[in-house]
Image (spheres, rainbow, N blue to C red):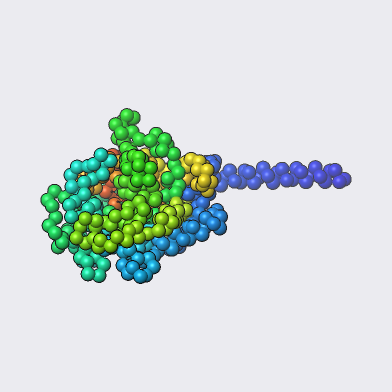
Length: 464
Ligand SMILES: [Ca+2]
Ligand SMILES: [Ca+2]
Ligand SMILES: [Ca+2]
Ligand SMILES: [Ca+2]
C-alpha cells in the first residue's frame, strides 16, 4: 500500500514537472538563452535596479565596507562646490573656470540639457585649438586661450570670453509623412579678453553620464581592437578606428576610451582634466592652472590644490558607479525593436555585448558579461556632425560610439532627452536621424521602416 502510494506520488510529480516544462515552453516559444536572461543585467553582477532620479548614482552592490567608504568619499568630492577662498576647505576654484563642481554639469551623474538661446551655456565646453598637433597627437593650444574656453572667473577676474548659442532648424518628413525637425547649434564667442587668432577651431561638447566606466576600462584592449576595421576590409560600410592618446601616468600612448572622441585613456586622467580645465582645481596629474602663462593666472604658488587621495577617490567613485539594469526586456515590442536594431545595423557600432577581463585587484569588475552598446571605436558620422576639429586620431567627423546603457532613463534622471555630442538632438528620433557617414545605411533602415517598426526601435532604446 505504502509502496503503491509512493509510485503514484512519483508518477504524479513527474507529470507535474512535464506539465510545468511544457507550460514554460509554451510561454516562451524561442528558448531563452542564458545571454538573453543576463540582458537584464546591463552592467553584469553589479547592475542596480533603481529606476528613479538616482538611477545613475548607485555604487556597485558588492563593495566591502572599506571600498564603499572610498566610493562615498569620492561621491562627496564629485558633489563638492569649490571656492576661491584659501582659508576655506575645498578651495582652488579658478581663477577661470566653467563650473564649480562636477555635479553641476553631470547632474545626477547624468547629463544636463543643451542651453536655449539667451541662457548661460554653463555645462557646454568649447574645446579649441589651432591647426597641427604635437608628437603625442595633442592639438596645438590657442595662444592666450589654451585648449578650452573658460567663460567664468572668480571675483575680480574676467573669464576668457562670453559664449552664446543660437539654433537653426529645418523640418523633414519620413516617407510615410511623419514630420521631424533637426536643429543645428551655433556657438558664438564674443568679448574675448584679448583678440582670438584667426583659424581657431572650435568643438562644442555636452556632458555625458559618468557611470559604468570601470567596466568599460576593464574590456581587454584586444577585444576592442578586434572590432576595428579601419579600411573596411569586410566591406560592410563600417570601419571602426581606435584613438590613441597620451597617458600621463605611464608616459605611453594608450587606447582612448573616454570622452565623445575617446580622448582620455583612464578615469583618473579624465577626472584630472575635469578638475583642472573645468573647475580650475590643480592636481598631481595636471599641476598647472588652466590659465598658466595667461594674465588670469594668480601666480599664487599654491599648486597642487587638490590632495592626491582626493583625485584617486573621485576616479574610484567613477569606477564603482553601477550601471542601471534594463526594463521591459521581455516585452514583445521591445524584443521586436531589438531585432530591428540588429537587422538594420545599429549593432555594428553600438555593440550590444562585451566581456570584461580579469583585474586581480578588482574581482567585482572581472569576468563580467556586460551590455554597453558600444564598440568604443571612432566612426565617420558624416558632414552633419563634423565639427571640423581633429582631436588626436579622430578627424572632425569622427566620434566614439557612445554607450547606450541607461539612455532610456535620461528623462527620469535629468528631465530632458537631449542627445549627441552637442545636445542638438531633442529626442531619440532626432539622434538617429543625425546619423550619416558610416551609419547612413542604418539611419535609412530606420527612416524607411513603417512607423510601428520605428516606434518599436525607440521603445527598445527606452528599455536600455
Ligand atoms: Ca586653481
Ligand atoms: Ca582656456
Ligand atoms: Ca567593416
Ligand atoms: Ca593655484
